[in-house]
Length: 128
Image (cartoon, rainbow, N blue to C red; front, side, top):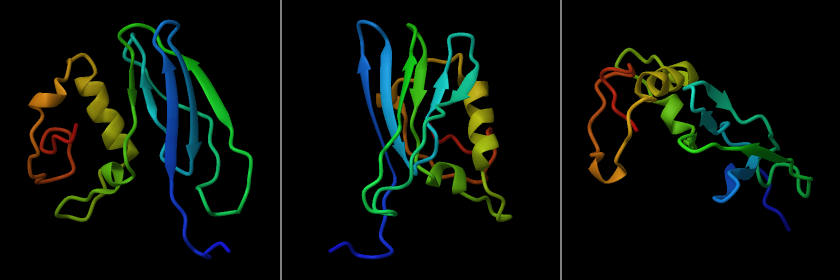
């Protein structure tokens, strides 16, 4: 028997490194973002309901092709719901603005340190 009121969001994806084919399913999760080689930021369009919301439902698979140098960004809803001291959310626009500002930079994940966030602005809140 299914517990009522519980659900989870998720993104599942596979990438064929030889062809660049990305197959993904998004279940109620914020849309992953694809940063194209020309630095255009595109939300992946396929979407389905969150897991556990409606019992058994079909989930829509999306397919995109990534070129060398393109980036897939998968993030939690907390990344856009974070607020500054004034209670303003960082928002989807804040995330996209940050990615546009930093799209040209190569980020080394092993060098990213956790830093406190003073406000939800692209200059004061390093969250990559």
